[in-house]
Image 1 (cartoon, one colour):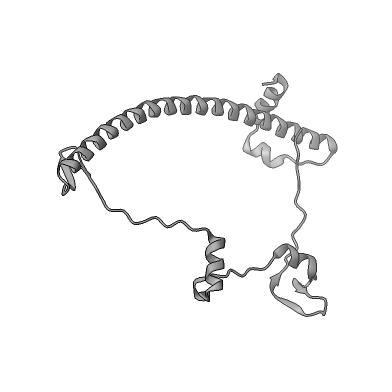
Image 2: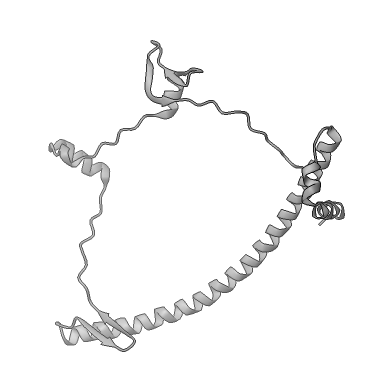
Length: 182
């Protein structure tokens, strides 16, 4: 870390709670002082995050390599078990499962998997009057609503005829202070 920024951080750490209560920003120079402190804090945060990210990356790499080795073994044993189960099923068509003290293997029926091309299904349903099988989702196009209707200071939104648009209220927000530290 830059020695000047390190010095700023040391000064921050030396400040007591009582001193903090007395601080006031009342000039460009005191504003500069506060922004200098914030700049040092941001630099330290970046340094801490960089170090942490490097360690996280190192640990994640370790985890991935260890889990990859283990997954390779899992796949090996699963393939041996699958070969055994298939052989048992061929020998005995009624074979369903087998149990040991460390686990169980077995065959289970699965539901058929339905795959849909939504556009073609909807087209078929419309042509053949299956309207009750079509779900229609209604929602306002909010970007277009904002363009068409006018908000007023009373919080209501009005259409071009001066009629209140029900269901919309607008709450003005105060300006937000934006502090950018260089």
